[in-house]
Image 1 (cartoon, protein in one colour):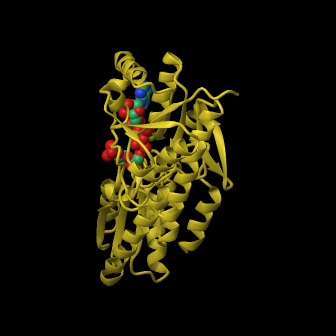
Image 2 (cartoon, helix red, strand yellow):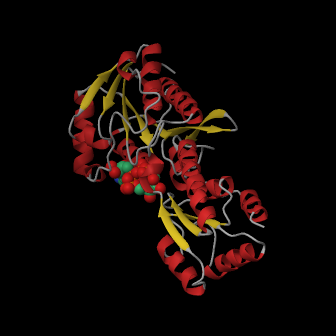
Length: 327
Ligand SMILES: Nc1ncnc2c1ncn2[C@@H]1O[C@H](COP(=O)(O)OP(=O)(O)OP(=O)(O)O)[C@@H](O)[C@H]1O
Ligand SMILES: O=P(O)(O)OC[C@H]1O[C@](O)(CO)[C@@H](O)[C@@H]1O
Ligand SMILES: [Mg+2]
């Protein structure tokens, strides 16, 4: 297919994730490699609405592959959710001669790009940038691996105190709707129990697990709770367990946004680099409404509707591993 794309706009949108900068760098350098121009759009869709953009070249993305956050900044743009906001965005896109977009973000960002495409026909390719790993069509999202490593480093530290004081630590990790961070970090940090939104858990079962652990000779325990778990939140859980077991010395730690920051791991940098290049190549080939992802270590494109609507299933083998090791 003839290449009509000459000038690509790139933005980061939704929650920041480590590796977004590496993806931006790859997009910009791939554009140069294929003789296209690239324009950075600041603060997600807000930058389109306010025409806050910057010409980018290979040297403008130097020294960012190792940086967390996003140098383009990001936003959750309420105005882009309105037809008026998107019309403004389209006008500025045309004023800046941008032919296509690379959107680095999560499902919400892809939904916005999809609607924008339906209204104005602007070609786009999405790159999954979120620590939650909750996007269908890719084995890994950019930022997930870094977040996992941040969590286990923190939980290892909490374990020192748990062990020294014979305590039960409840640790809340991110994952508004998904338990991937919780399940994997729970296994990696040797948690006694892991509570995730995808599973039907109960306080009763949690108490039984802690009682078993006590009987087996354990003096301290770690319980990992995903933010989106459905039993009322980590403080409520800790309160209910404490009521049943006043003798337990319980502490709660919410890791929060620490999990979104920091220098990306090697895995996230390589993933971001591959997907950034793939997105540009896809647009050159005339592809649109797709997400570039990784499956079995190969770059693949998934229709954006599927990426938004379908969900990655929790691997039941991992749940079994967690249960066996909590014996
Ligand atoms: N239905 C929609 N219509 C238009 N724009 C949307 C829509 N949904 C989301 N967007 C745009 O995408 C932005 C980012 O979406 P959202 O806040 O859901 O984050 P995300 O991309 O899913 O990332 P994460 O969940 O990882 O933080 C929104 O602030 C909004 O500007
Ligand atoms: O505080 P913010 O930026 O609104 O986002 C918090 C959310 O972002 C995520 O880290 C990523 O989507 C979720 O796990 C969390 O619920
Ligand atoms: Mg989202």
